[in-house]
Image (tube, rainbow, N blue to C red):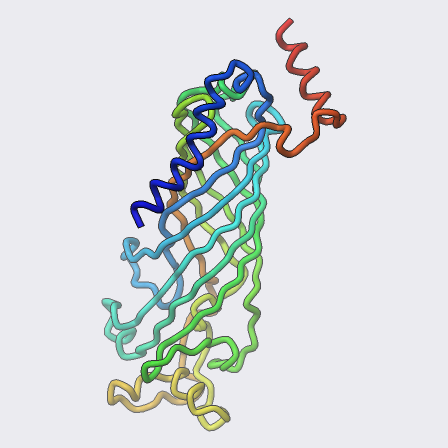
Length: 287
């Protein structure tokens, strides 16, 4: 695994290092940033233990960011991340007796606008060595909560444990803050924290009340809807509170990202109108 990481670093950095020896590498217009990020994801919902913000899972993302001005940019990112919750870890005795749990592998695609505190400079390599930025936007989330029962994992959404056929796709509102440190003319390191407000209370398959167990045609669905009997406790009565429908679920990312300034000609032909206009603007600023 270490060898693969080292190989990836060499593949990415070596060509740019060689190109950087050329004067023309710095003269190229570079208003687009490509990024890769690693970090943690934290879930907030009915199965989270209040106050335990260190119960995190991994997250990985890739993205592109384009600067319209030296402070304003737009970006799009694709993120894979995991979240989980388990009543068995809760401090509340009633939560432990409820005995619900879930894990979920998720994907999020978003588009956000960002504003930097300090101007980036006329050229990409003239940017500040340290900067702070804020961002907000909109995204689409795919989630698929699962639970383990008798040694096998089951997707919970098709089972309709509360009698609700909710969607696996939902809108989210990402917003957060980040800091960016310049490593060299071509690379930055950024540290970013961002919350996702969602429009669903079913990231964890828990929201409202217990359904009548007699209404289930699938015994697995009935067993996963009320897991108290697994602890030797009596089943709850239909209509008993199972979750909190008054508050939607959410999640938080804390990530470190490696950012690379990509030459504009990778995306636009040097004969294109946009590319020519950007070059003209650059030379006008130099006069």
